[in-house]
Image 1: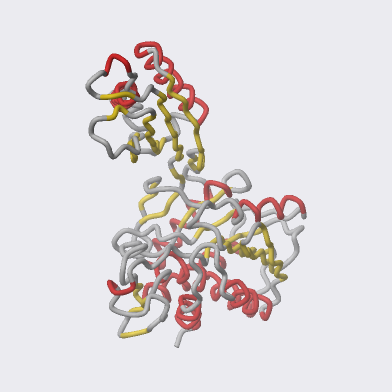
Image 2: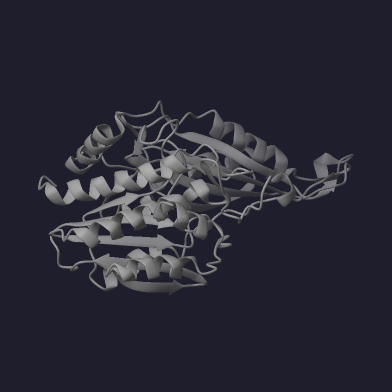
Length: 383
């Protein structure tokens, strides 16, 4: 059995629903240590993270891999055809939660890196960072690793994040950027009253309705060179009112914006404030807003590093990958402030789904691809 397949199965058997570790970090750390990686467990909050380096931190060239071992909850177990934490290998598939997102990629780049340095002694360094807090709030995961790296003068020139980026075939898509994500929480205060006497009350639903229509009718953009149009979606509207004859005292709503490189969180917050102020003026209302920014948009254009990875994917897999910025957020949004980063991983068809599974051949091919990228990285000097 290929080592990447065995390790993927063992990782799936670890019940690592965010932020639980269940021995997953130690499993990878032991494998890396045997290949002379210097491993450091980084604890923040209740999260275990791993930083591992082969070679000197003073190396002029360092290639890094980033991934996570935490997973989303499996949901209702009766809907699964098998134990979601079995790591069962059957036919040409590995089954279980995290098979696609992204324990298989962690296994693939771990084996690729350790096998490479056991045979080769590249003029440079390889870094592997793994977190247990990517699927949750992501407050104590990759952000904590990067904070530790800065404190200890650890640098990386280029990172590959092993998120499942491929759409139909392995290697058909590489992510060179991501949209930003911002969530706004609105609270409209009114005066509770009887529906038979609305003139004695102030209905907060009215002002919230105006605000929602105002925002949704103000289109953000038509897209940019590398990004699709930004989107604004209201996800909750709530008055917590079960009585049909009572005008509520408050109305709450939540808005999520996924934005491209034509905006920043700062410009969008100002844009939202204008809508709130205008609505408050019209209705003489009191709408308040709180904002949480999950990440800014970013783009790494067709750099020499990206060209090298594209060429290696093309040569090895006989497919020309699309450079994309689609999808949600990933930990690349933190890494991009530290070094150049791109994302390359498996076909994401069943990620987060019931009966999550991954093709064995894809895992082996991804491992081989990562190893050939490592070899090419240290044999070329154009980046």
